[in-house]
Length: 178
Image 1 (cartoon, helix red, strand yellow):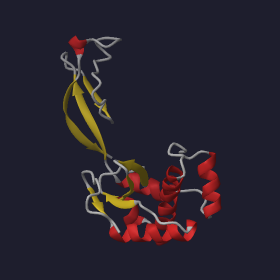
Image 2 (spheres, helix red, strand yellow; image 1 turned 90 degrees about the vertical axis):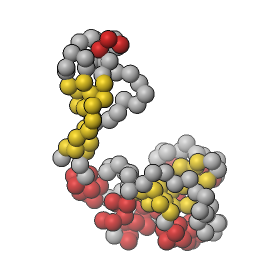
Image 3 (cartoon, one colour; image 1 turned 180 degrees about the vertical axis):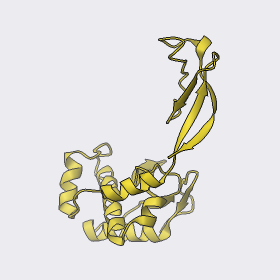
Image 4 (cartoon, one colour; image 1 turned 90 degrees about the horizontal axis):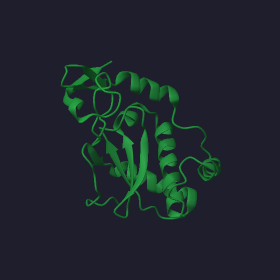
């Protein structure tokens, strides 16, 4: 059963129904118990249906709320199988297997092919506004970036070819873009 002490991030909620479904699928595929907890995320990127991670010894499968709302039950089950394959490989000592040969072999063994449904992912991405972040240089040049540069300092490329702290960009806000 899902534990209430699972580290849910911002915009993530426990999904007990999906956790129970994931446990049933995993037991039917392997005959073993599953320790993964399924979370539903309202903040997941539009082009991501789900991901698996292990945080503080807790196995988490995070699924996109947008994808779950628009997917059929068969598509939701395929998504769970996909993330359970990542969980299974991590449990068997291959946490960095990614989508490589081990993953593809397990995918064939478990009977699911290409995932996720690319057309459904395109529809979700098209319906989701993309945020653009406005940065200003001291000389007044505007730079619209689709991602934050993180903690990395960035300077104006118009004013200086290399990083120059005198032309460091200042964050000014966001705008939704279609």
